[in-house]
Length: 181
Image (tube, rainbow, N blue to C red; front, side):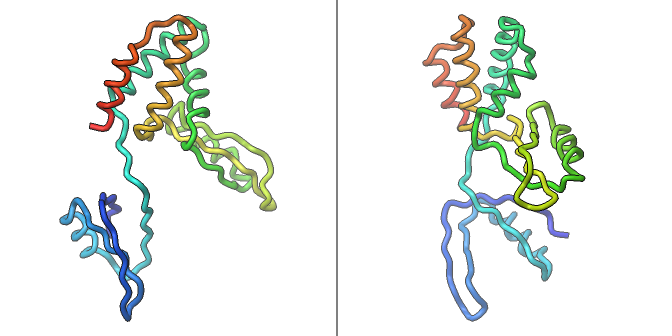
C-alpha cells in the first residue's frame, strides 16, 4: 500500500511525449518523493496542488484562548459560543456539501466530533433531489497563519470594545511575524 504524502515544491514544469502530458515538480524532500514513486502500483492517484501556507504557532493559539476567556468572563457569554461565532466569521474555512437527507443528521453529528470549532449547519434543500446542503466549518486547529491572524484580530477588537487589555500593536506585529518562522 502506498502511504499518502504531502510534498513541498518551489518550481514546476510540464512536458509532453508519446505517453502523454507530464507534470514535474522540484521537490524539497527528494527521498520522500522517490519512496512514493517506487511504491506506486498500477492505479489511479490524486494530487491536490495548492500554495503552501505556514501553520499558525501554538503561541498564537494560546493567546487567542486567553483573550476568549477574558471576553467570556466580562460578557458572561460562554467561551464555546464566542469561539464558534468567530469560526463562522473567519472566512475561507468551510465548504458546502450536498448530503443525502437520510444521512444529514449523522453527518452533522460526526462532523462535530472533531471539536467545538467543527461546526456543520443545515442550509436547506439542495438542487439535487433527496439531498440537503450543509455548510461544514473547519476548527482553528487546521488554520494557517492568515486564518489564525483573522481569528486573533476578531477577539482583539472585541476585547478592546470591552476595555479588556490586549497586547500592544507592536507586540501583536511581533507575534504575527513569529507565526511564519
